[in-house]
View 1 (cartoon, rainbow, N blue to C red):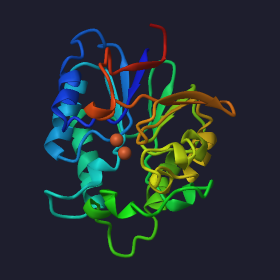
View 2 (view 1 turned 60 degrees about the horizontal axis):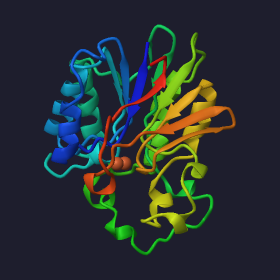
View 3 (view 1 turned 45 degrees about the vertical axis):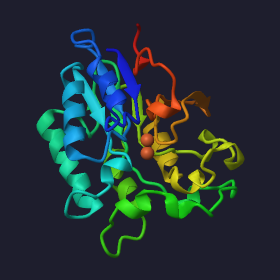
Length: 253
Ligand SMILES: [Fe+2]
Ligand SMILES: [Fe+2]
């Protein structure tokens, strides 16, 4: 089975939604797609986008990104919205838990970021109040670490698998997947980019490939035996013309 990957669809941008709508009907009926978070924050847009993808792929795997957990229009907190999105996925046949394809397992890993990820200690803190998550995410009282909260959810899935493992998360599992802060447009990004405990989970799974998103910096690199891939659609202003939004990561073309 062929497995494709994409992240950061941001289909609240009309041009991005059009690219998803243009995916051919029929061509991917036997294929799987990994969607590594950041579809949109509107539940309606998330649902409409997942429905488009479900109509084209045999299997769709998905984890939420940070944009999904913004609570602007709805009541409740970000954890409640997360649970709502998982229930929506269940009703749509979108997979948010490990599932075996014919020759590989796909294992979703939930995550968030924390400042400890910035092991280079080179992030700039001065513009952090502009980071939208700090305004639009609402966490339950007493929740100390979102990073630890989501990693804990993955723990039950850290086991031996009887076929090669393809794992994926929205956030970055390793600091070296992000350039030094001085090369970043937003130099505070290392503080809100990833979670180092995630890479320990990738390694515990023995994953062959790990797909991630969030930084909007595409990558395909092998580090210590694991292939790390990002194929982010990004925002229309940050990219040129796009031939296809899909990247084949497993199986033959
Ligand atoms: Fe994004
Ligand atoms: Fe993101």
